[in-house]
Structures are given as structure tokens and as C-alpha cells.
Length: 364
Ligand code: ATP
Image (cartoon, rainbow, N blue to C red; front, side, top):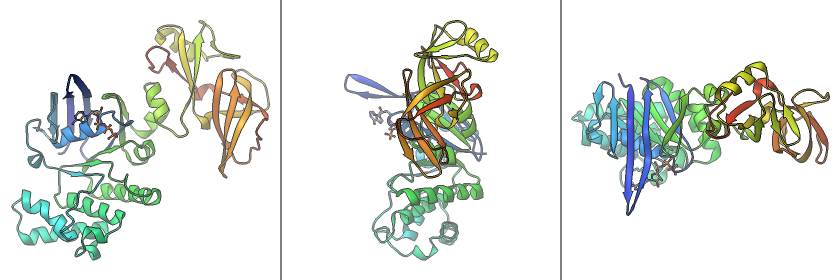
């Protein structure tokens, strides 16, 4: 059992007169065998959270459990974890095999034969068997990253902790390594906590994703839940590319009013507004891929001017201007729109989100 629990963890740093709350009362249950991605903007507390699981930072409040064990006060080397860093942290003077053996030698009493067996097995899994006698400087970035992974794998830990392990690789290699890491996870079925600031990486790799902002958990869920049912405006705009369009509006008790446009809510949406909206201000959200170009006038339909058209081949990204603000739309490449064209746009009710103007919480 390598279920890992972050239970009410707060981490404060004192810097001079200031206290920085890097992690604020965070609780997440990471399931046995799960690949959980911690994602959020720079400074949101992802790395600090990972480091508290590893034991590289003490917690100010709360507890960390690995399996059934409370490890809050346990030294990093005794937590049964292995960490993979962004900068690989390989020993330059040791060979690949030496790098992979070293951690095992220091922290376990395995005999040489068993260590060799594990190193060879991991090398085979990672396709680096031919590189075992080389030194790190004679390896490409991708190969170095595999060695760093190998060094973690040989330890056969209860939990893998990875801090932006792919961010030093070029875009193509990063995409390839994402797939490889997933295949590796499928094979090893080891609980993994993976930190990234890249929402695409989170969406493609995570069994579940935890979004952090300002040290606080915003939402934890599957990629589909985060995309279709964001808990608040922050998650809605953080997940998805290009970002969800956000339009400021007010609710008059009947309809949602935007500058130059009235959005007629469905009955269910009106009910949600009556029940959950605190004041009368809200924001409407619509993803670029959900904006529909239409010929016919209708409810939830209005005219925009195309200000910028970015052809991407299979699709076009349109920047559409209106009194209510700019809306970005992605439409099929076959739909020909030129800059300056007037286009009629529908915001389909089943794809429109609404967030409370005061709290940012999802209303519908
Ligand atoms: P990034 O993606 O930029 O690495 P992050 O989400 O991993 O960011 P953290 O590194 O966890 O964020 O930092 C969270 C907050 O805690 C930041 O405001 C950071 O400046 C602060 N912080 C982190 N480590 C320390 C430290 N040792 N002393 C003081 N403040 C720190």
C-alpha cells in the first residue's frame, strides 16, 4: 500500500519581517498506484508541497502519511520515496551505472549482485543498457533524464516524486518522454506525484490533477472533470488552450446582461443563478472551441467583427471584437473568415459557464 495522504499541511517560510505561506491547509488523498499531477502557476506552492512529501521541508502544520505510516517526522531517506528533479542531479564523475548504484549502496544493505540485477533491469526498461559505462556529459538531455529516472526506479520506492522532470528537454523530446513516462507508470504501477506548471502536461499525463493557486487547493479531479466541470474561474481559465473566454456580466433576475448583448439562461441556469449567485455580478465563460459560427439570428446569438485570423491548417483561431470584449474562437479550417468580416456567433447554452463575480466560484 502506497497511498499517500497530505493532511491539512501548511508550510510557512519566515523571510525577515515577512511570513510567506507557501502551502495553505492543503489536503489531498493520493491513491495507491495513482499518477497525480500537481499543477499551477509559478510560486503557487507545487514544489514546496512535493518537498514536504519527500521530507526535504518540514511542515508548519499538518501531517504526511505514506501507506499507513505517519512520516511527518521521518527523515527523507527513511520515507521510502524516490525523487526525480528537473536538473537530473547526476554525479558527473560517476558512470551511468555508478549513478544508478550509488543511492542503493548508500541507503540499503542490498548485496552487489542484487544491485547489479536491479540496475540492469531498470536500464533495460529505460532502453539505456548501452549507456551504462558512459559518463553523464557524454549523454543527451533525454538520456540524462532517463538515467535520473533509472536511479529512482532501482530503489523500488513506495512513491515516486517528480519535480518538472521534463522541463529541460526540447518540445519534441518532451512530448516523447511524456508518453514514455506514462508507459513506465503503467508497467510499474507505482504511486507518482508529478509537479509541472504546464497544463497540457497535466492534462495528458495525470490520472487526476490537483490545481493549486496561492498555496491553496483549487480543485482535484480527473482531466475531464477539470475541463468540463471546473470548480471556479481560476481552474476554468488555467486548464485548456487557448484559454476559456471570460466576459463580465450582470444578472437582472431574468437574463444575463452584457454590453450590447443579452444572454437568455436556460431554466436550470436561471435556477442556479437564483440559488448560488451572491450579488448580481458574474462572469460568463466559453471555451474557444465551443464558440459556434452561425448564419441565423437566434437567442444567445450576436454579431462580431473578426479582427485577427490565425490560420493553423486544420483549424483557424479567430479574434472576434464586440462591445462586450474580445472573444477567441477556434473553428474548422474549412470555415473561411477574413479579417474585417462580420460574423454571427452563438454561445451554445450547454457550453456556457458562469462564475460568481465576487467569489469566482462556479454557478453553472
Ligand atoms: P515554480 O513553478 O516557480 O517552481 P512553485 O509553485 O513550485 O513555483 P514554490 O517553489 O513551492 O512554488 O514556492 C511557493 C512560495 O514559497 C513562493 O512564494 C516562494 O517564493 C516561497 N518559497 C519557497 N521556498 C522558500 C524558501 N526556502 N524560503 C522562503 N520562501 C520560499
